[in-house]
Image (cartoon, rainbow, N blue to C red; front, side, top):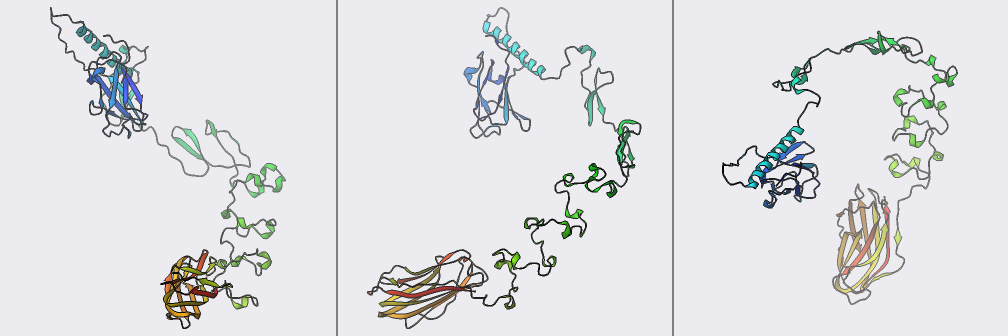
Length: 483
């Protein structure tokens, strides 16, 4: 067979799409392939090993137009989770023959054309791989006579670099040489260039104008003349009376250029502020303190409705002297059941009172008071009352009711107090009357968030179903907050 193409290498860019790649040239042995993967982020190359990193089908060896290689997935870093050549890597497949000739052709031996052709193919293959090496080498331009240039590199020397010699016909090593030291002179003004590695200081002096001229004998080296003290008040005129260009107006001041540090103490007085110039949005939080307010400056006419809330009043600041007559009344939220509530003779838990308690009304140290007047009837069953807030049982009281005619006048009282928090309570509940219930007060702790709306409930439940129906009647109930 012939070598019908100049192709002797193929290059690929990883896209995470395949692990099979085609080479477009003939090989005489699977070992003829040299496959290299490049990590494009680090420029590090990896030489792949046949069988370990890739395989070549036997049928593709000797094919004039080449064949395929298949990458072997063994967790190599250049492969993705599917075993494909990953993004960020490239791969080169080259044909590199061993530079030997192992065919022995004897005199008067048989003439086998395939053997002779394979040997000629090997020669072309080697020539193509050598050309690949030459193409990637540094070369002189076509018009340079190689006999006139010595391209042999000198021995390497640490910390030196390569350069052409003074006659430009050989490459030599050279050391870095310090040619001068740049020293910046002390003083005020501007630096002027006077020669290589040479600067002088020029003092800024002169009148109110700025001129540019060659300085120090160096063309293009400017000399500036400006006032020694810069721009003074004398050179500025209110409203541009002398020269409009010398006036400083709002348009000449950049945003945020005027800061508190640049304003003299007491420089801004009420007379220099336009009416309504100072707005709430322009005052930093906590910047208005009592010493900065004139006596009687804040009166009721200057406060918005509802502007003063509880959280804005310091503890101890509200005294009896500061309250108008009749202004102070106990905080109270009350609900009275005006219709009779009854419970049938069942053993399920029944709600006999329900009221929404507004979030925040109890406060961190207030108390919720509850009172109810009930009647229970049974022939020895146990009745359990539960007081709940937000679905959480805060108190339970039980007793045996052995009066079929009913215990009229059961008085139930409870108090739920927040203890320095809207989410921490202590409560107690008792029941009065000849009822068979325990009358002893027991303190119970709970943790219901009363800063949000919660439902107050009273429920009742029998241990066994009484014969009487209704078995429980609620005549009256009230709940209110005191703080």
